[in-house]
Image (cartoon, rainbow, N blue to C red; front, top):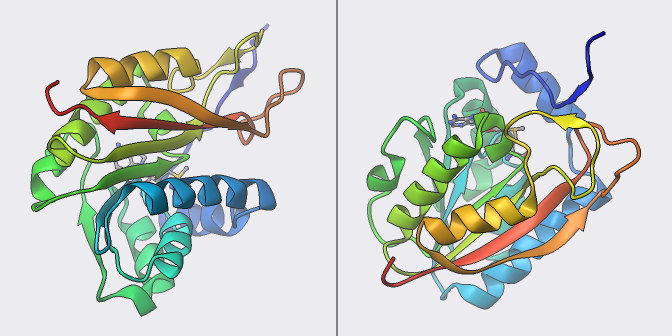
Length: 221
Ligand SMILES: C[S@@+](CC[C@H](N)C(=O)[O-])C[C@H]1O[C@@H](n2cnc3c(N)ncnc32)[C@H](O)[C@@H]1O
């Protein structure tokens, strides 16, 4: 008998899949709660005219929320999917003067060097679990520390495996404590979980159980 694995298969490079995903996951009230948490942390942590990098920008929903609420900041959205970047560009057209896009693989490419200039925050939602392993998430946390160059904040609002779960989860969905440990190992301090959203131990699905994780870049890793 096949055991159900909590997770999902994606074809982010396929235009029809990317369009369908962006329509299906238009932000719900709970996801807007996550966006508001990220926004509140950015408002508290980054300077006027600060610069934000988003990992796995997808259709641009989080970017839209942040750019609308913070009219002075500039933004760089990274994704490896051409169709997702096209969807984001169309959604965010009115912010064109404040946003740049970088097509890169978060694990394999040196995007932390390509985002030249000071970065005050690295943020992401619902993306890093798609990297498929704890090792890849660790690599991306280390690259995020590199991009921040001794300053700023990391905010990752992503799917996790909730403590006490009995089900099998795909490898990119793992416990909050392990995320926080990986953040500390890669140059961050004060790593903590701000919230668990759509927490469900009994009947988890691939669209439930996400956390908002925060850490500050250590000056001397
Ligand atoms: C589930 S979607 C989430 C999109 C968006 N962050 C949101 O919350 O609506 C994950 C996004 O991460 C991107 N992605 C996944 N793996 C990636 C990788 N290795 N490098 C760059 N982008 C990646 C996908 O193309 C997709 O746009």
